[in-house]
Image 1 (cartoon, rainbow, N blue to C red):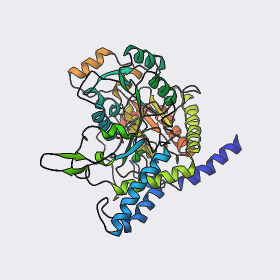
Image 2 (cartoon, rainbow, N blue to C red):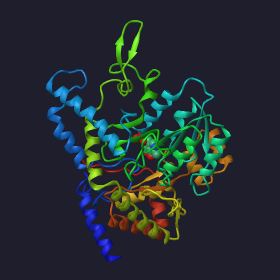
Image 3 (cartoon, rainbow, N blue to C red):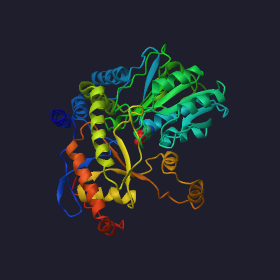
Image 4 (spheres, rainbow, N blue to C red):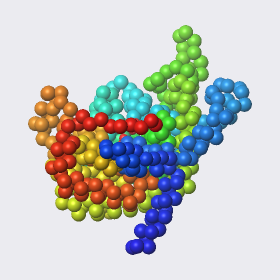
Amino acid sequence: MEQKLMEYKTLNENLRKLVCGVDTEIPLNDGEMVTAINFDNAATTPPFVSALEEINNFSPWYSSIHRGTGYKSMLSSTLYENSRAVVSRFVGSDTDYNTVIFVKNTTEAINKLSYRLCNGDKKNTVLSTGMEHHSNDLPWRDKFNIDYVETDGCGRLSLKDLENKLIKYNDDVKLVTITGASNVTGYINPIYEIARLTHKYNAQLLVDAAQLVPHAPVDMKSIDSPEHIDYLVFSAHKMYAPFGIGVLIGPKQNFDIGNPDYVGGGTIQLVTRKYVMWDAPPHKDEAGSPNVMGVAALVGAIKTLNMIGMKNIEQCEKKLTKYTLEKLKKIPDIQLYCNADDKQPQVGIIPFNIKGVHHSITAKILSYEAGIAVRSGCFCAQPYMQKILKVSEEDIGNYVEKRKFPPYGVVRISFGVYNTIEEVDILVDMLMDIIKYKDQYLKKYKSTQEQLYFPNV
Ligand SMILES: Cc1ncc(COP(=O)(O)O)c(C=O)c1O
């Protein structure tokens, strides 16, 4: 056990060298300087050094892409176009069949797909789930008949309900859209089993992989496999390349038809006053000048993820999550909101509350007193949070009627590959301190008016 822990610590030290900013010192409320601890990786991750290097190395060659005939322009175009294959390989996409469209982020990718699949007839059904981020719920609402696959009391997806709903809609479901891993509970959904079920009832599957691709291997599989994933979306800023790039992958033929959601430069082959001939995918769906630097950074990040190995990343984060959960479970005043086991795997996300302390106050104390960044609230997944926290219909109705911001929520720790056991120990000590001196802390942080001091950054 001791030996294993040592090996893990050495590996961890090496992994930290790959990430920018892990040693940054920040001021606490009392002015003391400490090394920042970032447990908010589900929101966004710091850049890999390799992503920055890729940008730096490419910068002397950077130029406008696609139509330029200058040497640098042609080189930039080649880098941009070749990146699609790098991304495809990373997630096992069938390059003959699928197209890789570069967008801003997961939210834009899902919105784009919702416009592509919508034919103006709201009778088409999309099955979303009760555990989605708003970005995989709201884009479908105004264009489709939307229904939600239920979750159980612990927030786990019910495959039984998925199949019941697929049967109920009698082969009329256009798309099942499901998160690969929840950004609230960290639960990983069995995407290949879901793909099999979805295809059995002649529907297609979109996996929102924003929280999965950075933390575990993902394989879209060949189109011939009943377990293939039809559409995949994810954001580079959650995978160590925060430079405004996201990815939408899906069947070329489905992007061939119809008009793009955004139109303008880069989307066409021929335009007259009366006629427009769209370019082929993916260009048709990438209006305006593309974010070449963002793509370069993503390629740099993918190289590092591949070098570490997604299986290793998964294992490392699993160990850290298990270690943290074991510690937190022993603290009586901590209420956990995830219930993962071997049957219900989980990425490194842990939602919790300290009994008697509002989630926003806990997050604030951790930041101001220990330099630990976590997130608190509902994490853009309010319907899921309402279910997990068992908020009554009556209360929800009251918030809606009074147009009140919901006061409920939890604290979320989310790990990246560079987080360490030592950092978790600091967190656990701080949580125990908050619990021990709860009254003093509550008095000190009752008002939310404290001013943070920001050094020149
Ligand atoms: C599961 C999930 N889907 C979608 C999104 C939206 O990602 P983005 O803000 O990069 O568009 C997030 C962001 O946290 C997420 O966690």
